[in-house]
Every structure is written in structure tokens, then in C-alpha cells.
Image (cartoon, one colour):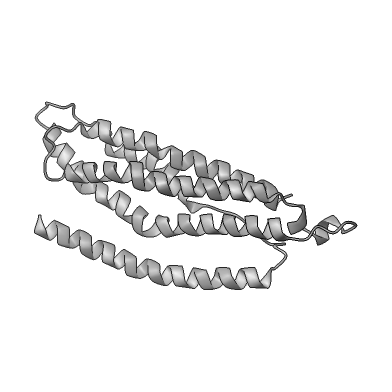
Length: 208
């Protein structure tokens, strides 16, 4: 158990060090981007968190529970403990990598809402000369709110399930592994729908 814990600690430490460098470089690029394009003519919105959530619910989890033995069978405990050992690899990367990405996306939506709301709206301007002035800030604000909802939902509803699934590595007694991971997949759909709606709302204004 100590060796496995030590391995996960080193794994997360490596990801933390890697993503700090990645995050710093991208923050520099983002700051330069916004300063270089004050009128937001080349603004774009994207949320990689959505792709991660889709992959988890529709690819990773079905693969993990394929041909899973039923509770009470001789192979169930072994397979459930294997799932418990596999699961941290799924959520550790999400916590270290996609959490800052989701946060940056939410901040970006809020910034676009602020810029669109505070942009002057003079009359008689050509459409292609006033891109930020023709956008409804409320769409970006809604996207930012949905981003906050996704982050809070991940912490309040998803993390306890992560802990219970990881605990299967020590004992599978009293827990239905398939039911737990299936419930996780259902809750994860919130993280599919909310970014999809928010991203679509924001994109509709960027392309306006």
C-alpha cells in the first residue's frame, strides 16, 4: 500500500510540475493575445474540458466495466480492486490538468462578458469595424456561470465518488463497483452538457 501511495504521489508531483510550466506559458500567450487584440476581432472560445468529459463517460468507463463479473461471484472482488487501482489514473490527470483549464475558460468567458458589456456602442459604424460592440454580454456571462456550476459540481458531487472508487483498491466489501462508476458517469453528464451550452452560447456571439 505504501509503495502504491508513493507512486501516486510521484505521479501527481510530476503532473503538477509539468502543468505549472504549461500553465505559465499559456497565461503569457493569453495575456499577449488580449493586449494585441483589444477589439476582440480574433476572439475564440473553447473548452477542452468538454472533450475530456465525453471521453470519460462514453469511452473510458464502458471499457473499464466491460465483462465485469456480478457481485458475489468469485472474480468480483479481484476485478473491483483492479478498478480501484485503475481509477486514480482517470481522475488524477483531470484534477491536475483539466481543473486549471476549466478555470481559465470560465475566467475567459467572464472577461469577454466584461469587455462586451463595457464596449461603447456608437451608431453608424460598419459591422466589421465593431465586432465587440455587436455582441450580447449576457451570453458570455451565462457561459461563465455554467463554468462555475461545472467546477462546483465537480468538487461537491464528483470528488466523493472518486474517493469511494479509489477505496475499492483496498476492499470491495459493501460496494457495488459497477453501480458506483455508472453513477459517476451519469453525474459526469453535467460536465458534458454545461460546457456544451456555455460554449455554444459564447460561440454564437463570437461568430456574430
